[in-house]
Length: 184
Image (cartoon, rainbow, N blue to C red; front, side, top):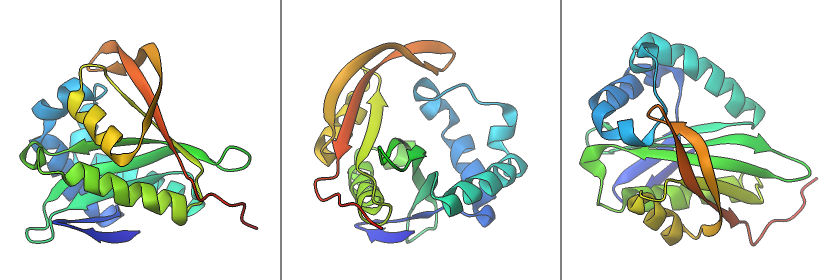
């Protein structure tokens, strides 16, 4: 997958991106810490990402997961990620989305634009009917991004995800593909 957006490129990750991704997470470690699960040391290494990307590439090939990078077209720097997991085909045609953005890229509308492109890809190319997303109630930036993209609040899940070593409540949201059609 490769899509150009306004001020960024959204593309599938590949094994050659291991150093780029490990640098991104290392540089943004403190910034992302309150929003992510605790990470093992290997998560911040090139070798760890090479192993992870081999698995992610196989999931992509099977249509069961997609790990996308948001890249600055001028510098080649990684600005963020969008990932689709728990991809289920017949009969529900659904998945979950998660994302992260570099501290230096916050407040520029990049995540909203990238998520619009990524959702469109999942709806059109992958024929997904429903995409779910969850955010912590105090994460107003994430709430605003999801709302702008068209996600609708569906519920509240107490102690839903282990984030930064603590069980965190989450608001559950989803977006449904209005043009979904059964494909042969």
